[in-house]
Amino acid sequence: MSKTYHLTTPLSDETVEKLQSGDIVYLSGTIYTARDAAHKRLVDLLDAGKELPFDVKGAVIYFVGPTPPKPGDPIGSAGPTTSYRMDSYSPRLIAEGLKGMIGKGKRNKDVTDACEKYKAVYFGATGGAGALLGKQIKSAEVIAYEELGPEAVRKLEVVDFPVTVVNDTHGNDLYKIGREQYEVK
Amino acid sequence: MREIAYEEIVKNVRDIIVYSASNLPEDALNAMKEAYEHEKSPVSKEVLKQLLENADIASSEARPLCQDTGLAVFFVKIGADVKVVGGLLKDAINEGTEKGYIEGYLRASTCEPFSRANLKDTVGYNLPAIIHLDIVEGDKIEIEYAAKGGGSENVSRARVFPPAAGKQGVIDFVRECISDAGPNPCPPLTVGVGIGGTFEKAVISSKHALFRNIGSINDDPEMAELEATIKDELNKLGIGTMGMGGTETVLAVHIEANPCHIASLPVSVNVQCHSSRHTHITI
Picture 1 (cartoon, helix red, strand yellow):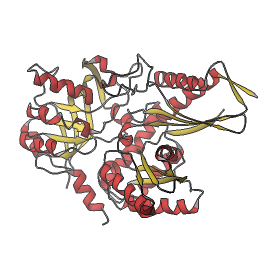
Picture 2 (cartoon, chains in turn blue, orange; picture 1 turned 90 degrees about the vertical axis):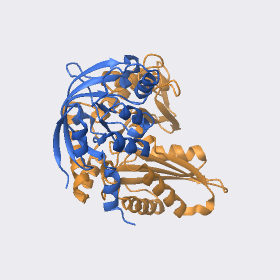
Picture 3 (tube, one colour; picture 1 turned 45 degrees about the vertical axis):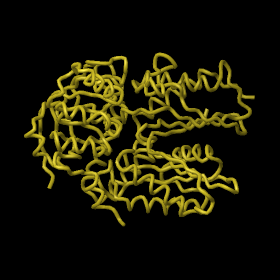
Picture 4 (tube, chains in turn blue, red; picture 1 turned 180 degrees about the vertical axis):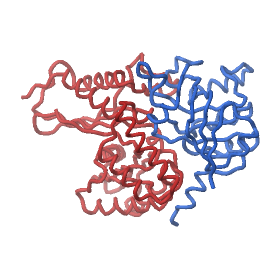
């Protein structure tokens, strides 16, 4: 039976280890945005032995490229993008202490193995619910790679941001479990 | 010869872009409500509820339904008795696209293929639009528009089969495409299938098939039957809303079939996410 949690970032090993695929989590606190181009740059920095633009230990990265804010709003619509495009970069960040990723869609084995080994979880947010999810973001600030436009790294403050645990630290995958239940062979 | 001002086209294109970004068309909204009624998985049902709520917020607060406000895709039929005055039709569509995306606070999603540099300050904000032109009888311009997101486009496929593959070959190809895609293209989906023609004709037909209203019946009874068969097959996959597992993976299958070469059976599958932002206007 799935449980519901209210969690605040940064996340600890103990916190992520108790999460199970299918659990519903309302996240609050600071999270960082990064998509394809930003991930490449973050990993390039690590390869060069340089510091990342934010502390990745215990951090949660949200795979999103928001629409521009309307005057007076912190951010526009901000739902998740498809996560597999970050698969080649995520394991490296997880090894550095990343504890959570928010996106949509499947991850590869390298990512789920890293989630088990280094204790990290992959959360799914509802794709296409950008208007609803954007409202849970209370502030947004570009902290790196402004020239990437929607792909810049942003520091977000979120309150009760709704996500579901897809891949937990125990090797479970919600997409597999869910589909097996309803597949007609 | 009827004259239509360049500026009138710009304004019309701008308006449909801004409106479509935050207002799910009635056919898509009804199909989502129907999926909500039929869905057997409580998890998928919950996510569908969230998506219906999202559509409400987007419409009432004029916020984009999704942050992926797409590339702007147009199928345009220009009447042979129309003269566009003050500029070229394609330029007017591109200018209207740029205006709509800027003034609607939509995302600039076009970039260079390898450097990935965003084109907003060089080519234009979310430009170029993808425009398919056709000349028809009459003195009107008919514009079909859709905002096409990247997630569903990324799982689309085309292949040229030998004629012996037949209907079963088509069914298997579509099933494999949607099964492999799983949660990635944001189901529940509309699946556009282009059959026949040449390689590129099949692909363009599969795109155009997505512009048809969800719930409409194919004029060709043979294709209508094939659509129903494929839809049933796809809903057996159990993918559900956003891949959470469920009975409602596909809202509709739309086929556009064309005559083809005696040697080939081209098939293209173009996938549309649940946020099917499409509309058409006549000027």
